[in-house]
Length: 124
Image (tube, rainbow, N blue to C red):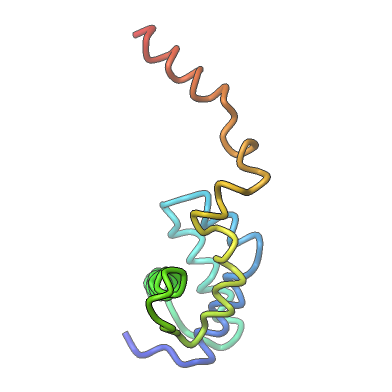
């Protein structure tokens, strides 16, 4: 596909920073429908990208962010990327170290689930 311009990436990140979109993305792997929404919203900015391009760009940005972040955290390099701060605002809260400290950790996976599951398993 054609190269993403700075403006296009900015628009994508802007949409991605929407809490609603983030929640949907965090909660699912089959995310075609979400990226169709993202593409539709990009269209409103006059940016013509299909959902596949949006998803690929999202994955690439996320991957690049993670590698820069872990390089920084390990202190080996001051590696950087163009949209690091914007992405950090979105993704910074869901890094592994933070996940264990987060308040809503318990609310996400109630212990009843795991117990209920193992009971069901042993019934069969």
